[in-house]
Image 1 (cartoon, rainbow, N blue to C red):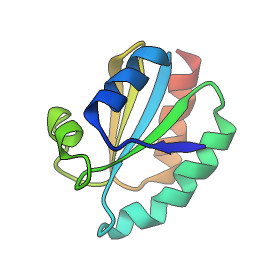
Image 2 (spheres, rainbow, N blue to C red):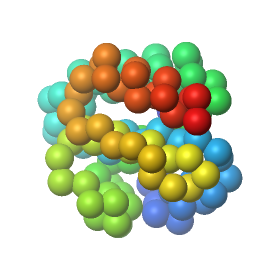
Image 3 (cartoon, rainbow, N blue to C red):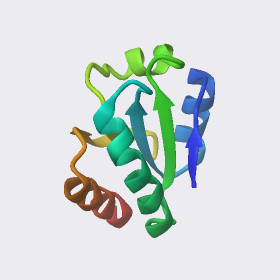
Length: 105
């Protein structure tokens, strides 16, 4: 399941309370985001050791600005609250590879 995060405080809390977190920074008007969104949901079922969250850059600009998001979709991967990887673009194969790597950390 992918959890939608609306506030920076909630985002920060999730990073502190989960060992592994995958974040999809997205926008409703972004075509590639709409394409990869359902695949991100499906990957959430595959990687149960990772907390999957989605941040709408327009609804939660404080979080997206704090993480330097300038293109969508951008995926960020965190281990123990620290960013360990980043992927820009809607590349499902590469996304799966990065998630496999995060799950093995």
